Image 1 (tube, rainbow, N blue to C red):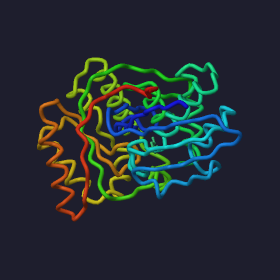
Image 2 (image 1 turned 180 degrees about the horizontal axis):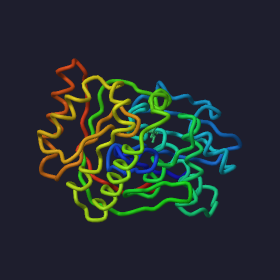
Image 3 (image 1 turned 60 degrees about the vertical axis):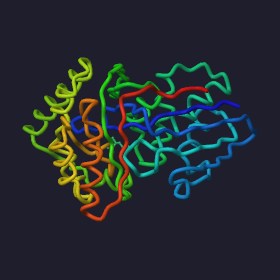
Length: 291
Ligand code: HSE
């Protein structure tokens, strides 16, 4: 039996839609695999009642199939589905790393990224790698068509997850099909600023780059209270705030000492809208770990 813990992740960071991702040190999924003649899946933990156990419909089933590695798979969810915190990616990444060891496939961590991304396609319709790359490799990742770049970075965040469900599929439907060249220019500049901030471990630069005028405004409509929560986090000391992945979680970048105040401000702001929420004071962390 092999057991692997894979972390929550936050994709996009505003200006890096479908490209940027960070591994967060909490929460996480734990996946246990054992050789079997055919794949079976048991899911427990946060939001497990919404996750299909049929291998044809489960992100992890697609990973087992891609590796030709049938197994009895137990998933203990720490990352709630439809959260914007890379729930399916955490399970897919953990399964890819675990099955690679169980069946001695000999693939490198980078080679496992496109395998785990096949699991993402089951959930969202697209095999994008911006969540699975950091879930497997850790740190800050840049996923493009020609490969993955990984940077170890040390940055603090607060994520706040409201008790609202936004499916990745519906959040992708509202993404504009066209935009203006001025918004593209602005986004390229902001994305470059985030990358510079990550290499310097500078929350001011990361925060300045997290603003996005193309995708985030359309998605913010799906999250009750988004503008108020964002402003409250900025007032409490966040250096930048945006939607985490496809939402509804909101991610704030900050200096370590401001985490608690930001978490409380975000929780209180959601409460003003009658929305319960949960905050995680977290940092950029490691990728999937084998126990
Ligand atoms: N980049 C993806 C999106 C992440 O924003 O739709 C969600 O899986």
